[in-house]
Image (cartoon, rainbow, N blue to C red; front, side, top):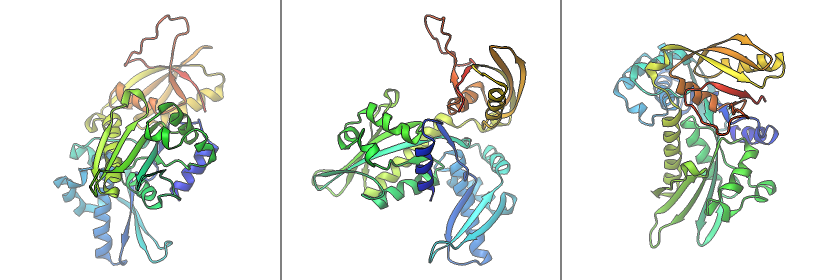
Length: 351
């Protein structure tokens, strides 16, 4: 259902955003055998550890000894639970946790904290099997496609596996993915509003049952090749883990800094009306690191906001970088544009 919804939204609202809000970051769904209290408690404790992995971006968070100890006090963190019996033959427990308490626990454990705004990644994966090359889709490799979504969901990573319909194939085929031809892949990925795209190719080692998976981002700054070797499903899962870890390292913030309040002034240019200003204020207030956005000055050319935020200015800029409504301001009269990492001067792009 998540995959179908994401695909539908990407087609309808393409080019509108560079990040998505992970709405289920503080919940987990597990299969259970029955509705007994012991089974529910055991599953809920496992769910808490899984949520710590998603929220922190740290794949080893569930191995933290203090975290495992905290699961004994599961009721302190749980918001609610419910059973899902919609899937024939499968009973599932849905456990939702209180975000504020999970964030506090993350801080106590000394883990990184990754906000709900996360970059959407388009994954173009080609497979060479018995000398035949094919791109992974729901039709060609349904189990692998589902594995990508399941594994990414466990890591809180928004991904999309392209539909590979006529519109996609007009731009991208096996040669573009296999050779990591960035331009057509990135152009096709715009349809899905992807912040970033990766191309991957999987093939068997000569005279071996092992599979090799090479993957890399399409943009030049992150062009480094990553290689994994092993079982077919194992290497696909490892790719998602490696991808999630790298993005968490880039976007997660210091958990201790998260609770240290700071204030900064953001200058926004390009708003055309009161509606633009109010919409910008609302979007700023919704950033994961912003606790309050206040208008402090308005002129015909700009609006200044006071932003109460957590973390550093760099963390604030990371959050702004994930919202396509804001873009670094470029002075049209300047001969060179020099990016100041501490600058909070932005152009309003809007929705």
